[in-house]
Length: 385
Image 1 (cartoon, rainbow, N blue to C red):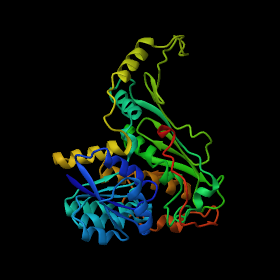
Image 2 (tube, one colour; image 1 turned 60 degrees about the vertical axis):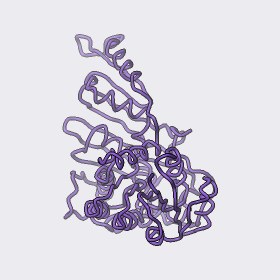
Image 3 (tube, rainbow, N blue to C red; image 1 turned 90 degrees about the vertical axis):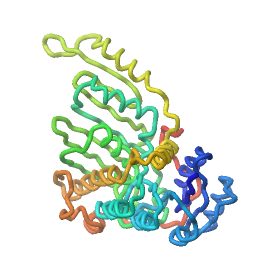
């Protein structure tokens, strides 16, 4: 039985708690920590965790409790220090996305993981979705051929008040806008599906939130050896119609699921009907995928529990988290400097270091409100509705 602590009891902590509670025979939640202990106490009550202790300091919780695993569900700018603190205390860590605002901080976390020998997993719960697992399986079958083009839409919508919360809307405290904090899931999926690109070009703006320094919209082009991908990161898209479309040599597959396969006439134009046999084959392959036992955060928590039990690395480790941050960094660098950024980003590159983004990023607007908390549930996107 693993003893688990939760650091940070804001809205996203509920997803972590629900995930752990899906495995009652393997984990028990023994402690909650928040700078506001009353909030932690309310979360404890809401989830029926009467036996769990409440702390107002992560270091104190780590010292007082005999923990095996912690979830870090705090604002992004705190992830590095808290992760290093927990790992050095001999505790395994699941840290919310994004891993950290800079590559330098990611490497500090990875070094602490290597030095401690503990497990580090960065949340990327969208890999644990049936629709994404199906898309990945069909792509990996090779039946659509090499991917020539991908269109990835991380399109969300947030009202103006969203950026009134104290830690949102500044480069220093939030680390960026939707490119970092919303599209990180789709960036991780792009890396999972397509691998690391060779180079990145991008532009960004703030189109609708004049109470935030950060961007609320970016569009990036990712260059691969013989293909391109375009990625939209947004909190200005009504309807939040998120999708991934992969155009292969022989067919197109997409999420939400669809399969199309064109064939050519002698003159190169599309023939009527296309390749019905290939489409039927792709549909059969998609239909044959077994549903996942657990999805979302519960899927990732289940994998971490299994990794600890089996003595293996988790499916999503710290290196995967860092690769997503590298891609975010490249998008910001390309948009700010108006040039193409080659990957990988090396430690001697200014964009590797903490502080470069804060120093160089434009303030599209100044943050005009700062509230300590906001009422209402968070929305994890169309797939959660």
